[in-house]
Image (cartoon, rainbow, N blue to C red; front, side, top):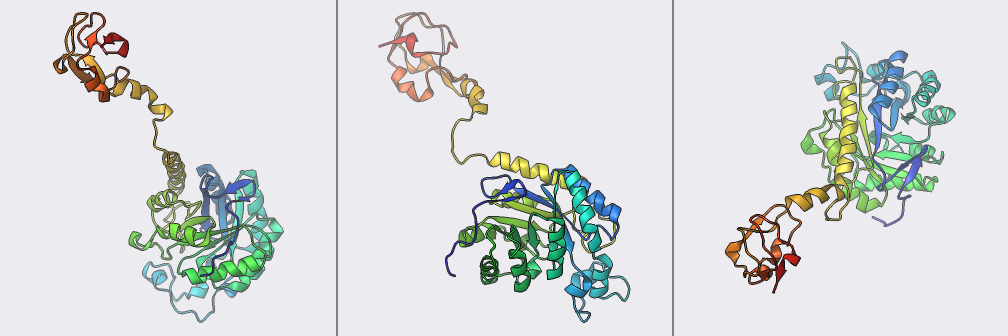
Length: 359
């Protein structure tokens, strides 16, 4: 693979910096969980904002632009009962596609709730719609990594591109990045992804996050379809700069993206877990922290008198005990203390200091 610089180490989505030195960018993925019901879509935006996500994202497509009417049945849709009687994949997508005239209202509602709005375009016409409402970034789905005309169209906007990489080889990713870079994209982020709904944990291969970071030298994120948020926390520990997670108002609703999505309280818990994980990762420097300083002084051990010892007496090992607190003569100086004399009377359990001793 040709070594090259594909983009910036960090960039802005709106006013929010994204990259390895910044908090993980959390995208609440509404997907098709609006059920073609505008009040539900608006409520999803509010839930994402209440949960503390950085962005709420929808999907912009039409059945006509996405699937051939001759597409064979997709296994998981059938086994999970997501297709209605005699319904084709094309029919399902037509049933759940979001009306394009909603976009302006959704974008305004997101702005009113101080959360970034954007959407995944699945066809070139969708980019025009999203440009009209002024989205600050684009997310491309794993399925579109070989849709080079769409990648080129998005890249020409000059806006940040988040590209999912489920089902993709490093060669597929390189081709997509080459296409984006040639069309002018400079702010690029790859999102590791395991495509299944939901995938098995054994199929996630989260260590690929570090592989992709090494291979492409741009920020790497994680797009997740698992239940719960275990994988999202793990991805953050491996350096994921962004996490995308599907959410819904209720998993009891009908539709292809509801069964593996988080409910509102779970989305909020995921954001908390990610932020706590970032705090916990802290610094790579091993040192006594400020928070440990009091217990460092009181909880570690030092040398104390094992009995009352009169002034001038020479100390033996039996005269000395190793106890807390730790602000006296350190334990590693024990051999230097044995054989010295006490300068003044010392009482049992007294923490010894160097000025208590003479040679």
